[in-house]
Image (cartoon, rainbow, N blue to C red; front, side):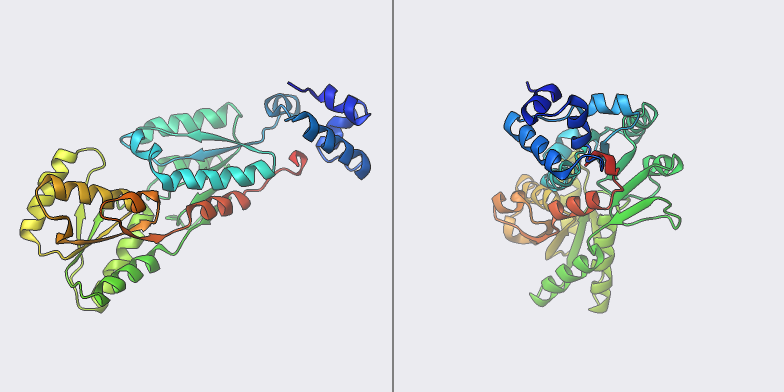
Length: 315
């Protein structure tokens, strides 16, 4: 594995000069910086960020805070979050920052993980992949005056040093409802898992407002992320009591869950139309294939990473 001494030797400069060139020191000429960069490429050299952090008493790590899920399998298999992380990583790499994931099966577990990252001085900036009401983790990060970006909307007026990046989820909810109504579907149900997650709530509000504008009653159906037995029982009862022609699913995973539950309770898959959000690979491979709204998670991740205030000494 190449070292900074190897880079300096190949570039024909001292180790200290190579280090300054890597940090874009204004005292180093552009010609020297270019020689060092070329040497780094030839040797496939990557700076030891951890060692630099210890020496400089600062860090270059962005913490990515994933939403709490009862089952981490459901989170890890969700293309929406994986694509967002890829978008974030692409920008962080350009700024010579690395990313660290913070997860938790419960809100308490996630909070402890984030507290440890901050108090150990390992992470000074965070990106939340989800916005939710009364978020104790967000409140803690805000209280610590840590720079952060949230993918979603704010539920507080005083956002401090927090930036927000989001799609217009309410408009998306209106558009899919209008689309179904124009196709002749009159009795439409919004299926969700957690209205505390503001993206789900905003999509519902768009659906509800468009339904009201067309003199249709808004109705919802809640499904658990983990209890499929209970979900099947509740969905069967719901369909027996409510005349539903179409479902608007809060995301692709919910839509596939509905398809699977239809089969489980013995309901024909074409009994209800389903439209969802995210337009991930899950929608393409579903049987039958799903109609889904593109929400551009990779671009959301890129934009979230772009607004983080970076230290100029890292690039």
